Amino acid sequence: MFPRISVTSWLVAVSLLAGCGERISGPVTRPARPELAPVDAANDSQSGDPSHASAGNESEVPSPQQQIDLIEANWSVLQSLVSDQKGKIVVVDVWSTACEPCMKEFPHLIRLQTKYPDDVVAISFDIDYAGIKNKPPAYYRERVLKFLGSQSESKVLHRMCDTAAEDLFTEIKLDSIPAVYVYGRDGTLAKRFDGSNSSGEEVSYVKQVIPFVDGLVQSH
Image (cartoon, one colour):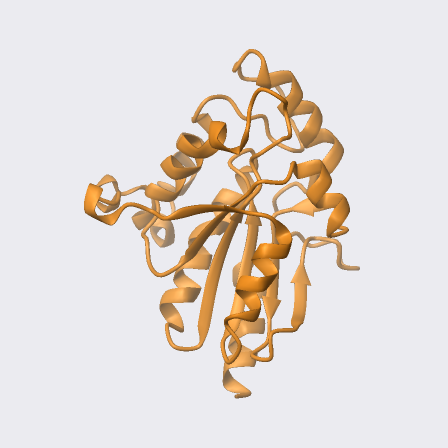
């Protein structure tokens, strides 16, 4: 079970690292973001799991002809994108390269899109932008693209939040990531997975998200 990534602890870690780019030793509940290190850590953690073998396969990094289209957007724009997908089940994964649990779960978003290419629209919503004055969303773009490029790409739509993470968490009343929003075919929110359930379980695609989406697909 992955540790829950709280808003306060993540913002503290980000603030400490923003000026120096060094790794913080010891456990950090919302992981620090040293330059590109979280991406490498995610790949290393997957190397022993056959189900993650493709995630760290350098041969699958997109070529220049397969560049990832990463578009900046706020939550309202994202909701408009969701509304445009009516008739489909939409899965929005809210994640960050500062969150190792997010990166470990991320390959399942791609597998879900691959499993249901005609029924599901998968959207990746990165929230690396911390609202630091001299570090706009574009500052985090290379780091985010590096991680996305390490994945087995499919038809996932990629968006990068241009609202500071703290403000976004307040706006959508979210306390932790990873978080996954599943919208029904009518465009309304069917369920949010964010680790705040009564059982205390953290977000798991295998245990929670995929079975829920399976049910929505089969009920159509």
